[in-house]
Length: 209
Ligand code: DLZ
Image 1 (cartoon, rainbow, N blue to C red):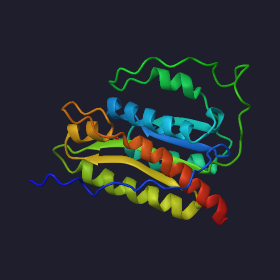
Image 2 (cartoon, protein in one colour; image 1 turned 90 degrees about the vertical axis):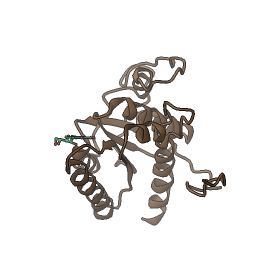
Image 3 (spheres, rainbow, N blue to C red; image 1 turned 135 degrees about the horizontal axis):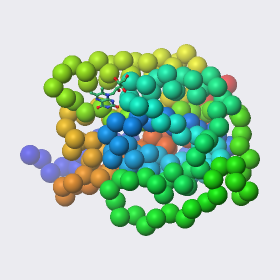
Image 4 (spheres, rainbow, N blue to C red; image 1 turned 180 degrees about the vertical axis):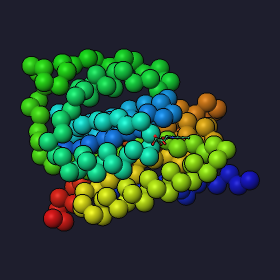
């Protein structure tokens, strides 16, 4: 085996995108929760790093990945959808198997210190799911249906839909892609890339209108 560094992965952009005017929806499945929680944490952390305001992030869970396209589609159609959970409270409740210190609690959405909720259309939707191959053809059908449907939604609506769906053959592959691998290699949290992709694509599509 070669010890050459891998050429895989995204080249970071040199442009500094500003997330502060953006409104972003996250829809996530609840199957394989440990990995989902880590990916959600990475996504939220990156959105906040780019300056996306807590009050402009709406997180909606659905049962499984098969439900993601409908949720993404309805979030885009119903821009009035409001957050029911404060992003920082959500972050502090996530269980993703790391030893991060607990995060400071902030007032719930609608509390006195919360920024006023916006009902502007979403600039991007991030769909997060973890599909792990089992013994049947279930995996293949769901992967195919979900990836095609999410692509169709973004092309039909012009709103970027970030493909945050891991389609893995083994559990360990999912853990490593969420930065919580159990071996020496903890891996990289792909949620961070999805947060950054959402801010970049939302910024582009605002200019392309
Ligand atoms: C049924 C099912 C199976 C077997 N595996 C997964 C999975 O690995 N990841 C996931 O997100 N969802 C899974 N599901 C649930 C389906 O996505 C869907 O929620 C149900 O079939 C109900 O429509």
